[in-house]
Length: 474
Image (tube, rainbow, N blue to C red; front, side, top):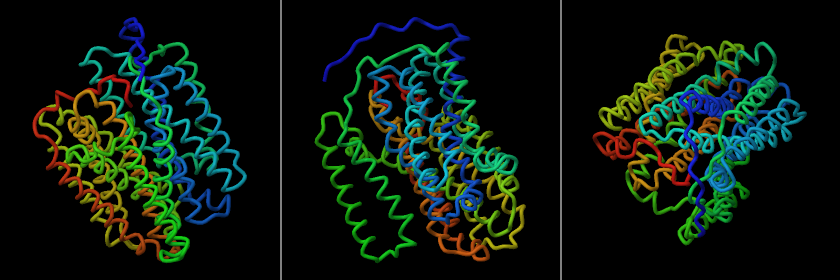
């Protein structure tokens, strides 16, 4: 591979550096918000486009599937061709596809536009983080900036249903996508003025075969879960789908194991600390997205609540995530990742267990308590999982660790929607609460899974790997 050397970037003033962070956080807020904001609008979308639960699952997962599949390659493109350039292209794609979502006349058009949104979002998340890391050379300032970054991402994910409920109630479901337009225009203008161009010192080659196979693996795995309840788990098309999924997965591992610069090196996942952290990241987002979908369907279709009322019940989740995310970062810095991971697992499991007996008469206080517990667990989870993943690899692979963990989070989001939707597929409004009970067991199980991840995490201060290195790998 040819190494490309670029001149050192001139140092930026403190105000300019933090303005760069604000612009990048704005884009990150969009990415996280669009992962969850649509959940609360699903019943309204279903009525507007005359589609059922299966179609609505694809509305959510088309975005997260593409986002998960392209994160690493988008980071590599930015390292090679310029981070600000790719960042601005991502904003433009995201904005145009958001307008296409708002104007979609049918389910197929909406799903296609959501997939295009995922393409744009994949150019925002890892690229914006690389811009922040490059703009902040001081390790202490960089660590604080990344803490702000993580908090904004967690807040955007948790706040999505609240924002979505208000928009759907006041302006209709299409406003969920119209709202992105002004934000994208502002981010484009600010990035042109304040964000400096940068490239990696050592640009990675693109792994096209690995990229195509990764997208196929994710799409097939999630597609099987979405379509299985409707087609029939033992029907011939499903048996063929299982075989295709297994074959593509084996092909992905085989190809990636033999490339000099693989998209994802399967051998990294054999390291217990790193592999556990990646699975833990997926589990946390399975729990979060299953919670949001089950809550939306139960409250709006079973109890007849408005989108705004259903969104407001998630406020305790958003508050718990917002308060506990910075506290988690502090605990990681002082005590290492184990204590906050144990807290995360315990709170998520407790929240799921609160609702395993859910029915139409379950009191609102119990619902709010469960959401608060899950939000607290979500807030405690992200910082120690990222730290554990980074500490599980050599220091010069920190960027790779962050990129794979981000991919796992988005795959977990898609998986959570597919699993939760599959559990309630075909249930009428009166049966939704009872049908969702296995989903709450799933949420609790995801929380309990974090306990062995915590046990595998290295004890003590994570100072060696607390800040991602700008090595050109995302």
